Image 1 (tube, rainbow, N blue to C red):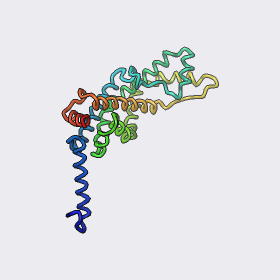
Image 2: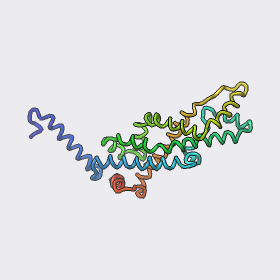
Image 3: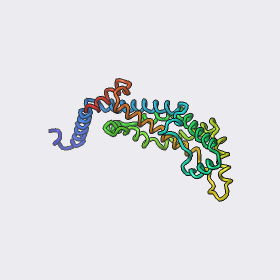
Length: 234
């Protein structure tokens, strides 16, 4: 009856919204929207913390073939030319130091990720829960790539100085640029390492998210068990 009373369109709209929210809750296996959102936030917190811890270990990047940072791709000809001149060790030392810079920077990643996770909304949470195995990571990357980059790059700059990347890079670039007839090069190492370091972290976060979604043993809290257990049995 209320739905047909004059001037009650607003009330009807609110009732419809309430009905939709009830349907959402029932469709998620009895989970409230708050539980869904809190569970996704916790999953990303756990995943990003584990990813940061893994990446920041010695050889976290360097000995992980999936995220290891190679010689800058735009300078591949330079790498080949230098190796042909017998500078294999110097090139290898440089590759090691840029990975060390990423490992050093990864130590500061956790609070940056956590600040970003706090902005997740209820709608985001419901959509992510029903998404693919890396939907939360994709959300995090889409929403935070720019601020993460802006915060991460100064950390990379400091890390580059700490592990003394330039000590290995400067002789390489000088030697190469002194070779007759080559195109001179000087890649932006800070930007290159920053992008590759962030890409590597997101890869690791995605792996952690997939574990939580698929492996009950990776759900380290009651909330994670409830949220992802309900999704599994839906």
